[in-house]
Length: 336
Ligand code: X2X
Image 1 (tube, rainbow, N blue to C red):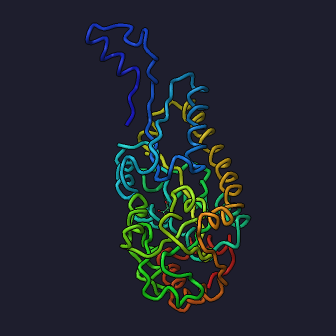
Image 2 (tube, rainbow, N blue to C red):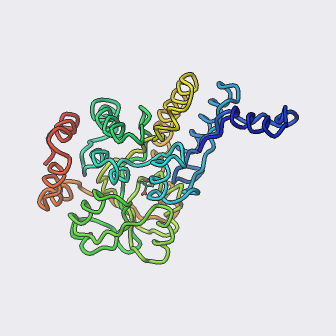
Image 3 (spheres, protein in one colour):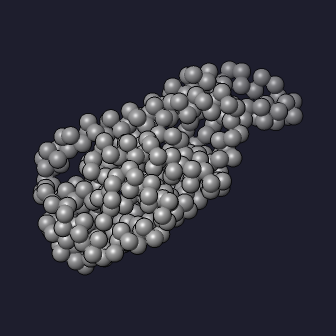
């Protein structure tokens, strides 16, 4: 939702009130809301705050970015509706959850697609990222900033047992984010996935509604999931990122000079956040072990074979279509 100082001043003039802002902090000409689902301590919010301060300074106070972390404005599912209708101006969201509106956006989450971060950034800052951003733009309601932010490679945690082989997933009540590809992947592993928005995940694990979940170590740490989970198995089953989305109408209502300043600082913050997540993750296995979590390493081959045998790759190649799948394989090589 945006308020412009011109409308505000016009309103004040109509009321015969002039110089309304005299003696008070001058209201920004544009005040935009940015929502996300992560704790304040996650590098994403640290860097977003830094960007907001730089934008306010460089626009001379004309643009204010109000940050609403930890799903304060609603769950991911709710907030996707709000950014589509313009009630929220910006929202960082996994492409897999976005895929309920822009189906192709889930393609970066295909199981075991990326061998490591070199492959991730070559793809997401290259043709695959451009392909997905174009699909988002075709939606007409949203645009995505050029730099995708890092969530990370996802690991599996449980309160009941370590995951050593795919058979350990059989029948497991596992929380997954609200996205068809997540449900499909863990059904293919043999689990019993339950869709729960992130803002209800801690309580679902605490009350044993579900026995496990999967997330990067930086999320397990900053969301304190180690308090309600015991085992962490390094399944590395997929990489996930956050598109910095804008409501198209509200973005286009900004003057071009302000758009340029906002985009510059948000994209720079995304790059800095990637480095922060990488640095933070380096020591998190030790940190989380110190908090009582029991780690085990997993050989991905058996898990990737389980997905192939279950028809997961064939299913999603059909859903995404040949052009998108060719763009993915062009970035990461043949996927079985
Ligand atoms: O919901 C999740 O698990 C999270 C925080 O990783 C995402 O936003 C996809």
